[in-house]
Image (cartoon, rainbow, N blue to C red; front, top):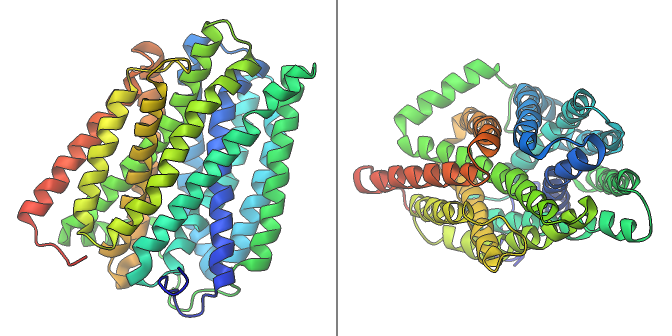
Length: 425
């Protein structure tokens, strides 16, 4: 693998390995906080079931607004002082946020905790994408993105499989639900502290020599839009990015919430419900984990627009099917979970790889900035519209909405394949 994978000049194997570990923990913590929020709504705040979709939507919307406002400053800061201190700071911030979350007893308090936590999310999320672009050479980008996707899926799986079971284990020992949540989130905080140390010791020192001073956000976006007008494949990459993050919200927030709520409605306790929701959620992540390497290898051998079309088709079918099943005890839940996991990882890997291929080197920062805004819009759209639909239309409606959008973007990709000249893979 080391001979096949070619790293950019100045990047060592230790730097790459450290990044992969950081990616493992980053997505693990993102998945876990989405998974545990429904537990907090039930155990700490006692939010009625028919209001939880909108509550989760407001939390997600507020998180993403903060992240959107901070992504450009954190990107600029990483260009000035380096990726290493920004990534380290982000994990330290997440560690503090995990300690604050279980202290909330009202929705305004939980919202403040979520906004505080989103500062760390913005820092590590920005570095997750930025360092990924820095490390591989172009001929190895698909492979490295596939390996990163594998580590991300493994991180999400491990976080939910291990941390997601702790409240139930503690409840079996007679510990109340609130204290069990505090202990579980404290363990997540400890993992973030450990990762901060690893990032400080293992990531590349200094700043990338090719990257100059960051432009203001609006000027950056204007440059990115001009590049996209000249190359419609960039629009496709941005739409892939939009859907990749919309898909992540559906599986991370509404899938886990639906599983836990259905388990509680079937007579299980809050701790038992989060344990019951763990198995389908882990299966979804394991299926994505396995498919990430396969899809990553395929991306370096085929037209990447074609791969994007395949990704949107798989994701669209998976999320539409997923809208019909939400009971963790259903005979169909494993099949649904596999489809959701494959769809999610296809969208994520395709968006990252098409973006890396299509972004011109001289305006790469602008194109990545436009894609970052597209990702944020995907999250804002799904948390707001999806949360409202979840409560007022039906628990399967966010799945149907996102699945349909995936298929529409697939048709746009097919149009590009037929009517726009394609680069060689």
